[in-house]
Length: 234
Image (cartoon, rainbow, N blue to C red; front, top):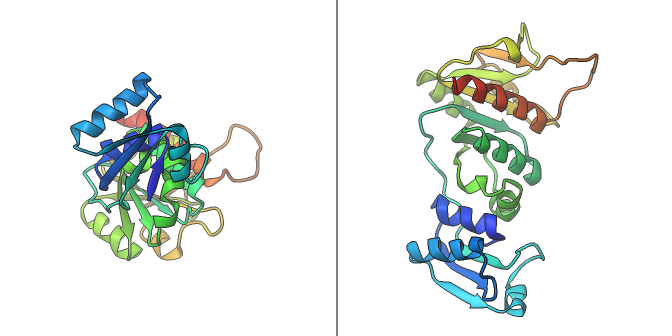
């Protein structure tokens, strides 16, 4: 596949989660940002091909490459590190999923679990919509979601489900446990029922108005990630 655009290319080189076979760059691009890409590519012994605009356009899939692209392998799956984990259960749109990853990475979350599906055809979109965060996070694919969450519970993780179930807690009143796993569902079906049964607490987001509708998945994630960051930085 090809990663296109300066942000995506920098992320695939720095993330080291895939093989970067070649970087193709417009030869007349000599800005600080493009010279930095040349520098980190050379440091990693990645071949660089300097092309004119027509040659680059012939390789690119769209018009948003901005003068640089990279030929790369598909992304490797990661082991999770110590720290908070977000399980994005059913957020399937690549733009929404990318926005969610961008937020999580920005607020210091390292670990993301995704449902078992083939992400290979959307990796280019995920790189762009996440501003490169897709290759900077630890991402694990849950082939058996219940087993994955159960194993984390056994390791001491407290499981929070963003769900208005029985006796939900206002997220603004909760002090998160030191090892926290957050379950967030997509807008079509929410969190899978088998996973809800594993939650230690349900959370809801209280509003400052009489608004009656729910936030979309990305907006809800923004709230939780921001509150988590505020608590962790103290």
